[in-house]
Length: 64
Ligand SMILES: [Zn+2]
Image (tube, rainbow, N blue to C red; front, side):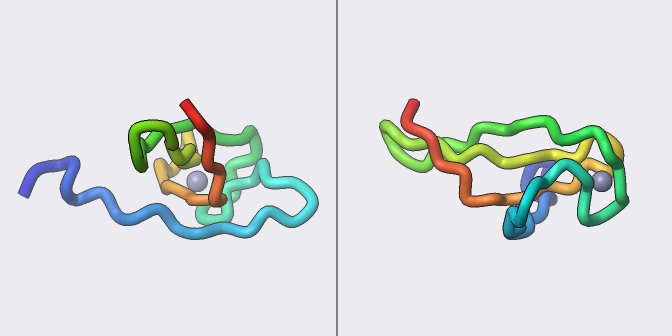
């Protein structure tokens, strides 16, 4: 089992008015991004907390 395989599935998060505070640790300066390819044309952008490194899925899908 490698490090990468140990990463948990990103938690689903609903954005209400604004999402800039980490739901896990309370860090207040927004998120890093990770692009996860879903198909030839579609990527999902996963948010990563810079403080606790929790990963969040806000259903942000882009065509790249
Ligand atoms: Zn956090």
